Length: 191
Image (cartoon, rainbow, N blue to C red; front, side):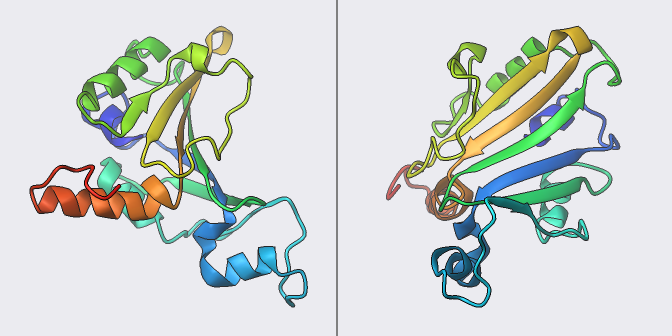
């Protein structure tokens, strides 16, 4: 989400970035899965959603910083939802504060150009959100990453949202795709 915008010069590498991520509980591993699925567990979780990594030192922050091209660590606050898998990651962008003439259309074009020819990344058309909601489970059992550019024209604000299956594209699908590329075979093999 960030790398294309930074490499295109739309966002300065030293821009203060914050991200939120809403993920299914499967992303937390066996212990978290057990706490959601086993009501008799001493660690049973009854709440619908909750924030975690409250120290803001989540294990993925160094990875996000490195691969995005950010000069500084972003603020990242993950949330786990009471559903098994699926994910929404959001990055707010105050266009009014950013240098240059950045618009939602320009952001979509940057993504479309950057991901042109990538079979598993799509940039959503604004009309695709006819329900007024983004479902974190909509891409489950796929290797697809869909980028949404939400905007408020009156206040010159954008939120970029990545929608994916945290177990598919977010983990196993990404690993299989990377291995295929390294082996010089069709990247969709085994997906």
